[in-house]
Length: 140
Image 1: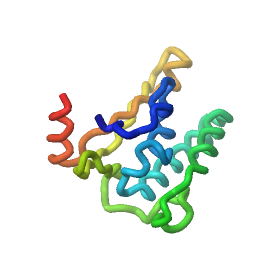
Image 2: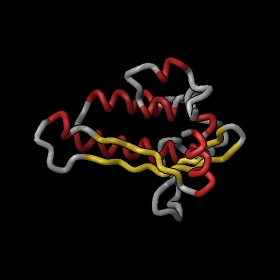
Image 3: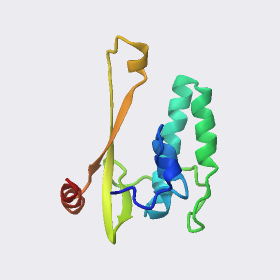
């Protein structure tokens, strides 16, 4: 439902959340706070690159950082904006004439017994307000 209008190539496995979110044929045109959300995602990706020293992740970062940004975005797009007064930065997105707001939660395994599991992180978008929660419930 939230992916209506997204290019099919971005929804073909293996699906990549950074591409899906920041690509101009993905969710990016509908994200109302794209500058802040983009800066947040790129900054988080740089932290992962520094931690894991992954060339593959570096290549993905270079790809998504090069995606065009709407002209109303001020400053360098990879720079996070000024701090916001939230405990977590919401992704604010337009969907079928509604403004929906989600916060992201990332879960990892702290004591994995397998190298593959050690690299696993599950990101979940949770409704950030009652209107978004009601909309998500209507999808079920």
